[in-house]
Amino acid sequence: MKNIILLLFPLLLLIPMTSESQSFVKSERINFTDINLRDSLHVLAHIDAFIPVPGDVIIRFTGECYTSPGDWTILAANNAPKWDKNFGNVGVQSTDSTIGKSFSHSKIVKYSKSDTGIHSYYAVAQDWGYMAGSGIVSVYGTLTIEFLPYGSLYSMAHGSFAFNGDVTKIVFATQETVFASSVGKIITHMDGWGHTNVGDRIIYAVSNSSLWLPDDGNVSVEAADPTLDVNTFSHTRVYNVPFAGPYIYNALIQNSEETDGNGTVLVYGLIRSTFYSSTGPVQVESQGFSKPNVDLNDQFISLTSVSIDVPEAGDVLVELDGELISDPGMLH
Picture 1 (tube, rainbow, N blue to C red):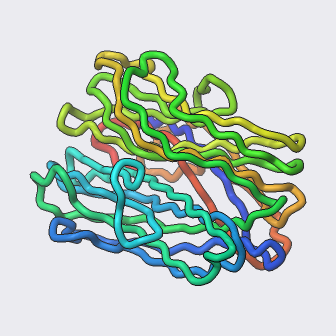
Picture 2: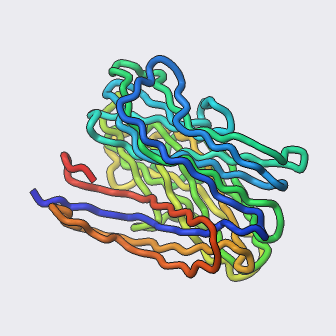
Picture 3: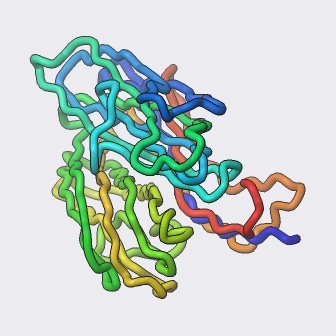
């Protein structure tokens, strides 16, 4: 059978490592197959980092989870070996333990002068709430931390949001304003999870306008059935900054195209908008792309590429997120 796929992924790369700025990135790979999450909370990854000066740390736990049907698996990034309710985790459900579900969870931690020193960061998981399955879960992903010191080279606005209600028209879940000190780029991102209704297609988007766009301008989710109505989401956009000043970004939600449900959602998420000055050491490059009607039967397809000129030793952080629609029964 021909496999038809619609791919709507933005891709970004950045180099945040230089001694002058004191910014850095650390990561830990996660590879757990058939672990039992029923008994207690599990720490899947742990990073210790020295925070040298006041600044922000972006903690992200991203990857793929194969969970048992009937279970609700909690996944979270945190600065403590635990998860918190609502904004403090994402949940994964599945109709088939052989079908992986992607996830992304973020947390921002602010550090003052008195907080400098060694700090720890965690990726955790636990079965919770719905536990009709076996409790056996496989998780593959990455725990990443990015430290950005306060100053003119970087700035960030972020906030958690919750929305419970009708989204038959575009809803502004929240709005953040970040101040850019010079020419540069702003990465705006939101992720989280929500309950939706069968028959509805729910659009999530971060945007500098009051509208979401097709292709790489949004992601969407649909509930599999009334008892499997939890889905995670992650959407990223990169904007050029032509001059110093305030820039506003919105977290948008809407029921669109498929509207056979009741058009309501319960959503928890985090939006962050991060400014990187062009005069600083960080390079940011991105490439949005759309690949409709791609046949992946027995072949490898290159989706897109981004090139950077690396001036010195450092770290490269590569992020890929978006939306994939495929034929039932196919694994990608």
